[in-house]
Image (cartoon, rainbow, N blue to C red; front, side, top):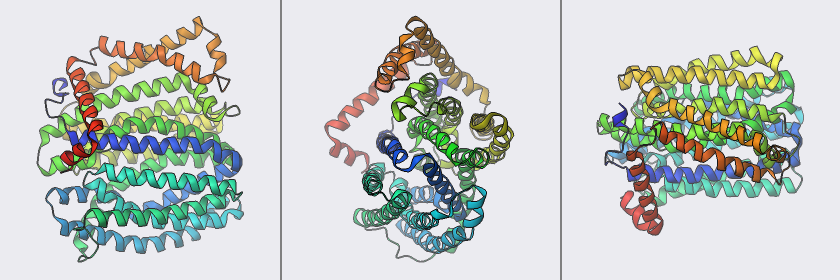
Length: 530
């Protein structure tokens, strides 16, 4: 198997280009979120910020009532676009529009009915009712906007989808600053969210009509197609439920047992580690439509090569980021938020390990979804959905928020292991031990030894440890530690033969492609997306 982990001369320009645009869009969105977080905290305070986080969790939960329809658009549009079947694409969009019109009404109504018990259970003040209502409306509108955005993802035009998302994030950031500066607090954030959702609906639908006149919602309603989409989507929805439980339920547990203020500390830790998680995941963010296209062409060999190659490179990046964040957690928190959030350091370290483990199963999850077999991820997600609250409730009273974080990380470890075992056994056709030995173990060993090198450097130069508590000196300490970590990590990867001559050739090909794309972006985009 290890010999197949190469490009084999079949470097996919479209996949790499889409990944580049996804990386650009994802990094931008997380950069905006990281920059806005201290600003929002300074205007809301830890209690109101925690309340805003809980409201966001409630809305994410209500979105699961769509039976997974939202997750099926990319797969179906990609498959139909491969065969230029615009009539079916139009039926997909019409079905989605009709459903989400009804779903929006159900969403707002059910949300209002559940308002009182939710607020009582998690100690939320009734004064936030207006904020809650506006966020419900925003969610109903944004679902339709997300459906139109799925068109660009389905036809693998990530340049367009990310350009739209970047524009919307700029609008949202400006609105956040203006409303908070005007003293509107959480209500201002809710108003801004509704305005952003309406703008997203207008911009996405207008761009679809302008770019692809063949696509419209003027089609015949196809009930059979809608049922097929629900059949696919409900399996993907289980995965969405698992993600919600894993990344959001711990905050509810913290709120219930430790108070809303404690949610703020867990949230900032989660945001930082989610940024770490998102960076390697973006490497496989274009997988589902790309694998769907290969599946439509019955090219199983290329699917397996793409999966193995992605797993290898994602593992190297993920382990590096997780290991470095573990050793630099205090410095990063100080640089980002200043003093006063020291209790979030241990949460960052624990979650970095758990979220990093979760990323290692990303290629298997995305490949399974792309070939129309989301049940691999669905089953592991069911396990995750059971274990996360179980471990969280078991550990929170004795170990506090750190116990909740440990519970989430343990659940991610077990669920990811199960995913890899079942995916290899039932689709790849070999033992998961092979990929563990060839892909995962060597980067993990390199990351551990590189962290030992940084710790040894701290013993030789203890003044750097003091700098991590001083905000303006923290960047110098981070840069110095990176200067130790990065060369040691890369040298060990080469020594362990994780990085080979083939990987170097792949890297140089990627650099050459990147330079050519930057020199002639319009010409290259026309060639790639023709």
